[in-house]
Length: 605
Image 1: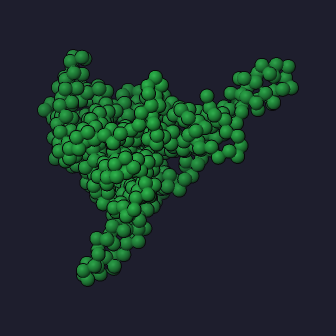
Image 2: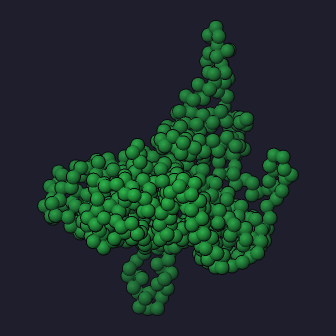
Image 3: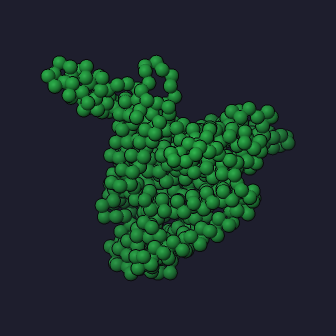
């Protein structure tokens, strides 16, 4: 039952809604996976949150009874009438939350960034840049494995921001991957499982937020003279085991060419038939279908590469500028023996990456205009039309992003994260079991699993970090008084947050990865989940091992990599034996595809 809060009561949301706060995100996730209708599922999740919010903050049945009292059967109708009132007011809350999600400054900037990237993709297509890159890659890559490794390596290099990472890697490799019959699901997995993990392990757009949460945790714990947040962040990197092992898992899967679960079926379909998506799939982006044939008669690499260089350069420069970086001061510090590294560090920490991405993507579109006019491929009117067509490419992604963020607003209003995190603040009382408290040995594993569940349910890594990091640091310090344990807990929080960030269908990173690789969103989630859960299971075991034995993570991580290699081989063989197929999709017979590469992929790729 919902606890009804009277008007004016300052009752915490998680106490009012309790386990009902889990319904909207879980409903959206379950419906999306079961029905493959992401838009409808997300909308119903937001609407259900509105209904629950109405029931928790008032009495719809009483309102309905009063409104229907003049009818002969008004009292009998009050029951169903109450639900109708809740549904109506819940719908109003639903649209209010959707508007709030879209109008949030940081979200609006990401929408602009995504729309501009759509226009940049349209320019790359119409100017022949995408075809030029495909032709260049086909001359140098001779296998699907090579394409996968190229996408993986490029993702590792673009560590500074996960959004830019997915956009550049997905757009650069999509057409080449199709020519070598790599499924969209597989490419989306490579891109998604590289972008977020590498961003949280390096100096990236995530760092400032992560440091602020570490500081908040020490502040809550009341620690006198705590170590610097950046020092703790560096110490936590080896404990960010999920992110490290997720990157290793991508390399293992690509190099071994083995798949299991839904991914094996997707790869066999793609290799055998040349169909890189399901027949009834709904790709988040279909450039060829929406834009038609290329306008350029002579494909040029510069029309693809130069806009990407502009995107990266302008994004980094604007990020440094918004962070207060001065080239004059930096140069003076280098020549005068000053703290040049400190100046750069401060700029990276204080930078506004959302602003930088907007300026970078706008400059990318502007460079497309210039190239179109310079090569006399388009006039000004055609350039404007291409820009608008690019916005249309991203329409589905933009709507899903807004609805995914709306789920985030819902879980904030209902206190979902606080409700789940509450178990760390006192004894855990499960039905049928005696109450127990969390001990230091199981704390890292529990924090990891809790963070993973919250991130998967809410679709936000940053929201998960903001909820769990301060609590986890506080609890770890109170239990152990050890800065090493605090660093391990920070790594566990970041690990769980990354799991949810790239697995949940309501995560913006998942949506963008599907968008720029041209994958169906739900197909991407269903195929990637097998691999992500495998990595999560190994990570949980490693955290338990560390908790009980205190073995260095530098020794545990190689063991984890070996475990993943064994699991990939074992699970792929098991799946293959059950369905009487080969665990390597390239071993399947190939049908002739109407869109064969200039050099046909070999069976030993």
